[in-house]
Image 1 (spheres, rainbow, N blue to C red):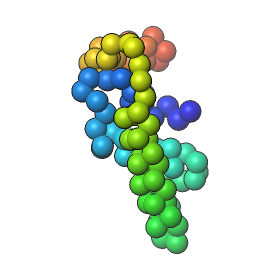
Image 2: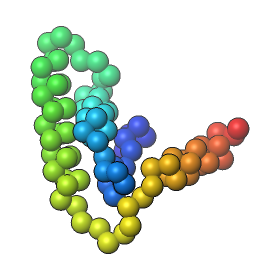
Image 3: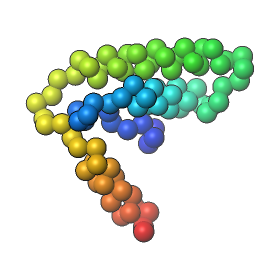
Length: 89
């Protein structure tokens, strides 16, 4: 999985449409093998991002969990601590 795609499920507050779009964009970039499509492929690239964001939103809205929602700041600090261990500070 692309490291830039972050888990979006079970957060309080829920993932925003911007976060869902950013994840869809990263996914399409990874699959397409390009960060910026050629002008000939721009339309299909943008359509893929829209469709994946749409499906992702439905997925997030329909997932059910018994776990309490995660706190964004706590999870971000865990990620920073993990990065410090991995890369050194």
